[in-house]
Length: 335
Image (tube, rainbow, N blue to C red; front, side, top):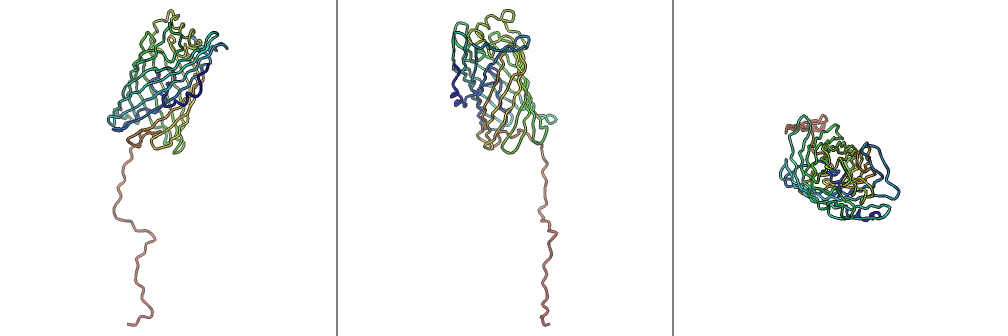
């Protein structure tokens, strides 16, 4: 059976788009000494088919289905104006059906911790280094009759954010990084390109492309049968998780609303356009960001052009309409 929509109420714990991603649909780290940032994301994915090894699409059989909720909670603590620490956890809930059985599984996916460091602005580009270690709490097994809630492995990841203001109301963020996975799964190169536009004081519009590529071989590349026992046996034949040498590329769009100077909520949708050995289907996400300790969070841009201060003279300029007052002599005055 499909997972009940009531799970959406748990949006305070959020997911990542393709498996355990490095980052959700959040802005890159912002830095302010002693600031505490809270980030939540909920992600829902409904599989419609798979990308095969040659890149072709194949629909799931009418008797098969797979859907997944991912819930992500993250806390950032800024040690200074250049560095921060990150920690949090994820909860997953998946559901699958095949011709014989229907399966549901809800559990703690994993915990993570890491940090970020702000580099110098070079020729108008802001840059941030970020790293994270993920410790899984939900491993996949061929002996357990359970649908997967993730890849089920530990990983170490990190990369570089680059940002630039391209217009007075638009900013461009780009990301490139790697994700080193345990358990014999292939290592991944991650990328993201995210322009966002300021519509007015409250609303922002974002769109972009992101995805990943395998740059090392899975240990079961020559014989993927052990992986297929999980994907086809328990996951309704969906290659969403635990597949051999996956590649995934999606387009996405979202709208953001800043309801406080330091808080913003986003609602968006994404759809994969290319891939190999991975699932295809519509994805929806809901995020919430808020900050405590300062008023610089939300969707405000994290860097602005430096403006020179203008010093004004303390002497007040006289108005062009100013006339010196003089006493008029009375025509009736007697000398």
